[in-house]
Image (cartoon, rainbow, N blue to C red):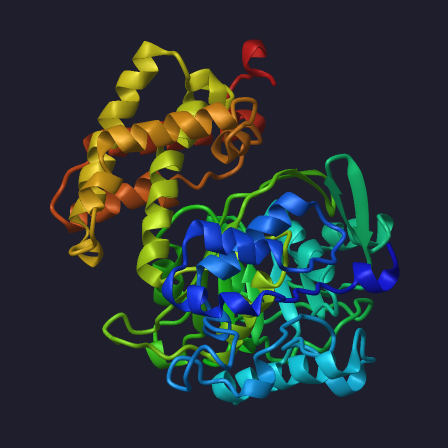
Length: 501
């Protein structure tokens, strides 16, 4: 495959006779037929790409709602007739690339029409130019995976990695200043990242609102404003990590939180951005990809998944909240990546997805940490099943009592105890050989995310008048084991030979 085909993603719609069916009957059969008519030129597996295109079709974007000038009136398709015939994504019409700075690929007339479409859409939906540079804070499993995926895009945005100590900087230079991603046994190495240094986030140390930038690092000076930030540190490091860059964030900036647990944004608002008018725009993301790290800046993509994203309104009372242009840019840029398979949701829908994931993690993570077993070790254990049901009974009742979800259709069915138990068993079966993040944290003697998993359930239960005694006990059992393990490693307690991993 030539370099041109590898560096471009071309979607060409050829079946314009389906325009009326697109507007009136978006059945699965019709959607499948449309997807088959897309000309896909990208060096990636066809199945994930097929579903990526299917999501575009099924979400019925306005520009695809009707494609034939003869079949629809102006009130059903507001776009001019000269931009309705062919749509394709390339250097010429990418929202992030100046068409004048690139050469045309493909037929010249098609390029003009595609470029006209993009210019028309941008004129309708974007009037503010957003800096393209994306900063990533937290280059672990998720952060490295996102950085590599964005850098693999045709005409990728500039990416700056925010490193937090000299040890990480040394590892960055030793392994060639690149990020390596292994998928299905194939290694892909990406270069060209810029790096900056911030202090190491620590859960027990307060840092001044300044960044410690070393002169030997490449990248823009510390005074540069960060407009687009992807945050993927551990939940308990979030506040201290953001303090290092808070002076570079503005109300027009956007932060994408890609983390486990809930209650993180409330903590950030309380300790860093108490003034709503000075807060950046927040986005929340839920990642279901299976990724793990095998070394510094070396990641394995073990299982394909998605990233569910939503722009969180600054004021929940706004009926139609306005989003910062940088938030729209972040959302658009991540959804461009076929590897990330990012999908946008409404804030309410994303909240329900978060709560589903929280319910699963609030069962698997603490139990695997207490029993010191992989996820599959919880299966086919009658005693463990009884504990699960007791915990899920409280979790289900708390979620169904949350005021922000009142009036949501099928809430009782979606968060029924039996359905949640099925979700837990399904995830434990699918990830049977994996270790939970809480188990890994306990084994290395570090802090856990229990305050943002089970602790969140307990706090929200108290707010709605429910005492979650089982979850309260589970939280403190794990916190006690975490502290005991840390003290053992510090040799404050005798080390038991049977407890050495």
